[in-house]
Length: 68
Image (cartoon, rainbow, N blue to C red):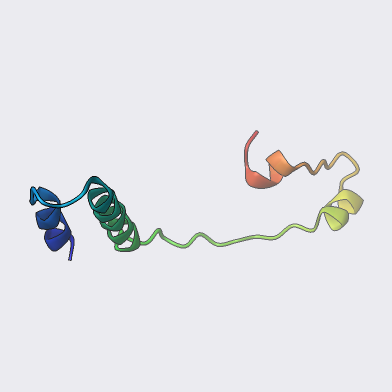
């Protein structure tokens, strides 16, 4: 499929808009066929329970997302 789209883009009679569509499709196909990431175990921490255990516990969106 990707090879056909690349061949279509090499044709001189194809429009610029169609070339852009083909490029987007190529990127989409490559994105969908990329190797899957290894699953990491997800551990949920209830902020209320953690705050009751440790009074110094803070919960902020950046901390939850791991961006410190």
